[in-house]
Image (spheres, one colour):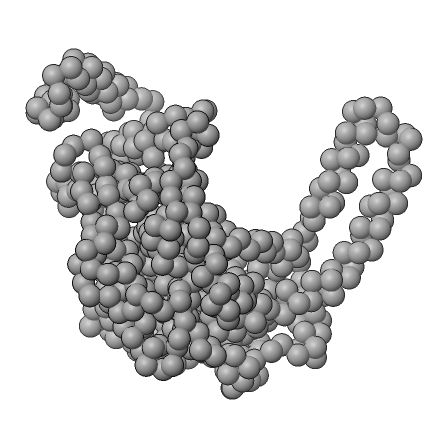
Length: 540
């Protein structure tokens, strides 16, 4: 029986951490859990793995709370480190698996992969002499990462060239929080993708350099930025507001979780006109930056409603090199509002529901503009979300832009600079010829609606009266789809431009080539082009 005593003993030790009223309930359930575990371990028909059983129990318990409270095993320590710090040791490239083959997808500029001359589209054949045929993407990733300073031999197959073998030295790869900044006309543009350590310094340095290069207005792009470290968000806001300004208050279960965070440094510029771009994937620290600048009437927010994550996580080190990230408080921005959209204490069929309308409250910005809590950050200027066509989604899913760009790169050593590069009609027709015999079947929303209408007509006994019309509709839709590449030509060209440009100019080029078709960017430029319009958005 000795091997079964551990859990209740540990449970008794943990009871010291709980208030008296919880003792019996916790003790009872820990005892039940220990008995269930014992019975499964001793009597289940097949052999079980104790570690996997306990991990499933831990994950199930935490899943009942919120998606941000997670346990990390010793084996996951490196992955968690990357989440928090943006740092890992490897060759500096992402990989892509297509069927049973693995390709280099995006080399980072200035990192071992790119410096060794390996390119996006190169198919990886062996790593240190080990064939990667039939290996999973995760297994290939593990082979590519390793001790900083260690040597790795990578053999690839490149179109029009054949087999190439390169020796690389792994480095500590620090992902940039600001992969791009530049001046377009007199507007400085900063792309911020994460809030790992030094994010504040990177943005501060970018603002200073852009001002020195002639930028008289700024756009901070927080779209698709899922957040990160709270202190970095405060440092970034501090660039644009004075020292001593309250940015965030956190409130939790215990007094030590109730804290106020103010700006501590001298700002860079508290006057320069500023636009912040957000979308539905802007979350957490991104919402602190966008929301506090909005509350303080320091920036015009452009785009779409943000994600709505107002929860703060704390990392706790556990035994055996394990750890967990646990939600310990909620954060409130300067107006006093909580931007949390979902109520994880109130679930229906296991899913959290939106904060009820009766719980939402109105608050006011510094200038007296009304803002509401419980709904993320509402932009001051809303830009309609662009919906990508089913055709484009299918071409992306089947890697056809990627495959065509590989062929293009094998035939062209150079292209125009990203801000000047355009896919010509000749090149587009070449791409269209390339996909003609490829499998990329897709169903449009209109086709789904026609199918649903037909089903409803049958159910309502109207189908025999509408049969001819439905047949004609389906035929018309088939005819339209035959010309879908022409119908979505502009969108396809844009996606093709991004895929081709990143072969030559990496992440920076991919961002620059997208400016032409970026509705949020064009709206931001319009607002900043007329300061009376800009100021009007910030006025009561």
